[in-house]
Image (cartoon, rainbow, N blue to C red):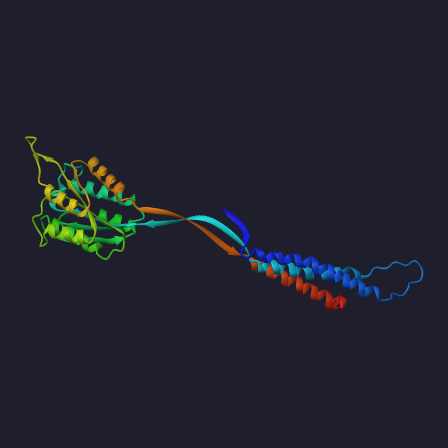
Length: 318
């Protein structure tokens, strides 16, 4: 909402002096002219005096200049009130298992493609957060560091493939690499979403050691076990180390989830999205802009006009 006002409104009281000065000088001028004898003009001749017209104009310009300079000194301002939005983003690392088992087709077309698709949807819904991507199999590496350029991140998620590193599942290394991406983060909230469909059977880093590092750095870890494969005799094969994933989540203040189909995986990401809401605060702010220079400019214009009239036409300092 826009409005107008003055930084120093009390200065406007000086405007009361303008009529006082006007009446004083008018009375003084009358006394002066009464002492001057004007010769009689023979006959009934009327004439037009340019001086009689220009003198009041010159005087009026002087008083206008004085009034405008007083208004300028009061510092007229326009103000606009608006609400400033302050966003406290969250730094998030997506840590995704890309071992060959992620190509199983219990998810259509396979676990990895569904995981990529849901991760992209998650990224699209969090425009204010920095998000990075770590992938792991027998080893782990950073596919994308923390970034707010989510278009690049989406492209890099799409490019993720299984088989780019040796076969294995190094949960400990995947978690440790993700933690390292967040160590230098200045964000108040730091989160890792770790997804795997297996057990830790590779890598040089113990998952529990990586868990302790995450805990020490105040990083919450949400773990997701993905997959539900059934064989010909309808016996469900469980290859996920749920005990380990639960331990990691509990120790770091996160949660463990199990996704046995694509819809469930989307629900899990939606729940994490609600649990880790970006904080957006509104702060009322008023923006003020000075306009005194307009009044100063007009005052100068009036004074120059007065001086021009007096020096070119009246040739008087009264």
